[in-house]
Image (cartoon, rainbow, N blue to C red; front, side, top):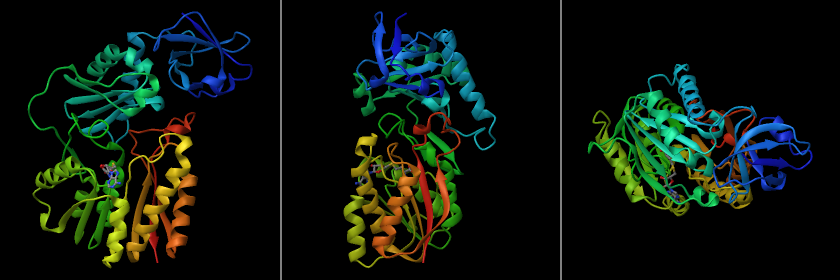
Length: 396
Ligand code: SAH
């Protein structure tokens, strides 16, 4: 096995259990390694530190599998890590028994580059790094053993794979399509999951708890759900007794699934729901011109900053939509606003929204800080894992 030698002092982040090794930390690679191969990691003085996956194409040259430099990275390693991830979720009451559940949340579950979401009897896997890509078969088998699910579908078509020099890969790793629509129950709603073509693995499981919060807040309110995707927040608002719910997204296929989801829940009053296929940036401005007011607005945009380098442009985009949403709020209205950009910290996000409120001339107070659901944990040693942050605001 090849050994990755760090520059003097660069072992500090490893000793703090941070799993990424950037190119600038690496002095040399002793021996030969192909992309995805396991390498030993050693300090400049030769102290063994960890075992990692080598990824020469990426600025993150290596991702640590184990901080025990003697642990063998093999099929059994993945079986242990996958089983431990599943057990952590089973031990949390709000997660046990969820039909839609993130089983593996990459670095924060000790498996960099591995995402696995369970939807009923189907597991959808996304492998985003050279190391994860190499262990596809072991990961699929481990997921099968840990869950008993006989169907595992791979959706490794995320853009980030390009940074690793990897081609997109999609297809069945275990089992095959049943031909039936895949529907999960979440917070009492039936939700169709298009894992073949939907975003990410098909559904945004991270917003489960926050959607439930919307149900609590929506009673008798006029709701605007921006970036609605398949209507997770919209259906909860209807279930919570909203007077009216306007849902907006630029994706036709997402809106088609959104309408389907409304139909899958016939107890809801469909007459209260309106769909708009539109660009949120433009439409928020149009709505202002038409004098519309809302009492609860949800802003859950896509990732505007893919890396910290895009943070400034992203900050402008966040400010823009928050400013225009705040202007549309009726007195006493609520704004639930999110950022899922890794490069935007919770602190920075709050500053951006504060700037938006100032420019909108609205006094706003934080009712609640919001985050992703518990099946998207954040390892304290890996703050980058805290990608989803949100604020619930009440305006005067
Ligand atoms: N809130 C959703 C998830 C939102 S994902 C949920 O609970 O499931 C972000 C969504 O924003 C995607 O559906 C995408 O199609 C949409 N989107 C991206 N850019 C947009 C834009 N400029 N205007 C409107 N929708 C946009």
